[in-house]
Length: 126
Image 1 (spheres, rainbow, N blue to C red):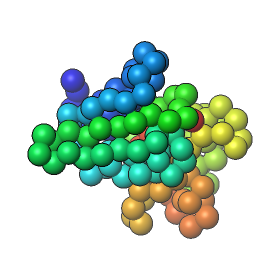
Image 2: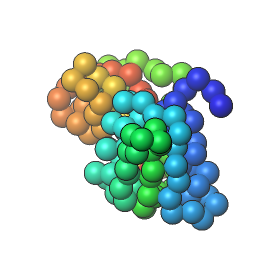
Image 3: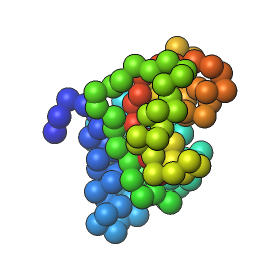
Image 4: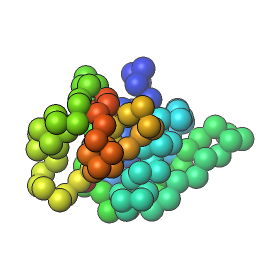
């Protein structure tokens, strides 16, 4: 295991999807990972997630997901550069989501472009 909780969590989700499982348990939790899972749930990439505070485990049920990865290094982008990274990481124009950490919280690339703000690239999924 590495030191990056987000990268480890997304990698576990991707590996579970590839192996044909529809749920998994993540034992390392962070607030950033939970915010990313909220966005993935809104977009349908995961069906639901449940936090078990007694066992300190995050249970994730996978939905319509093909790929999810953390972006390393965490590039800082301004509002004009978001489109360049969207073309780099996503397969097509209206497919997929890049997650950006901004001063207004964790947003998708569409929300960041609407609000005309930049931030730090965290992850992508489609």
